[in-house]
Amino acid sequence: MHALDILGDPVRRRLLELLANGECPAGELAMRIGEEFGISQPAVSQHLKVLRESGFTTVRVDGPRRLYAIDANPLREADEWLDGFRAFWAPRLAALDTEIARGKRERRIQSTQEAESP
Image 1 (tube, rainbow, N blue to C red):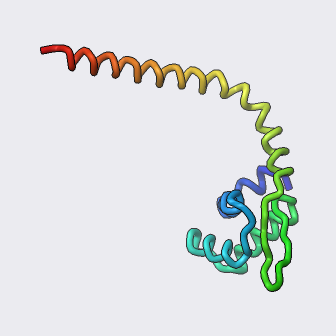
Image 2 (cartoon, rainbow, N blue to C red):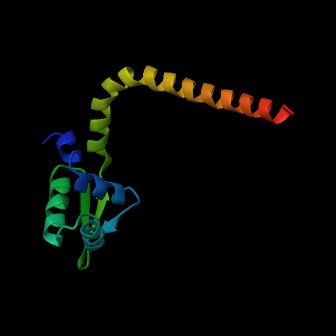
């Protein structure tokens, strides 16, 4: 499965977001995702299995708990694939940044002029 197929699912993206804060027990992930998405613990387990089998997460056993963590390698691969598209967006984002700065400057000048006017 391609990395973007894995990341295309909102539940799996959210699981990765939660794991970005560090290692987390499967039970806690199931509870959080269940509350947010209204899905069962077995459904969350299936998403965790997809993430684990595709290499996006690692799991280690700590007594009765399974602790999940992110494996960054597949994310790097997705980032490298997206890198080819950054050249398309970079000039547009830079132009947008310039326009935002210009608008802020114009509002600041206008505000100063209004404050100085009797």
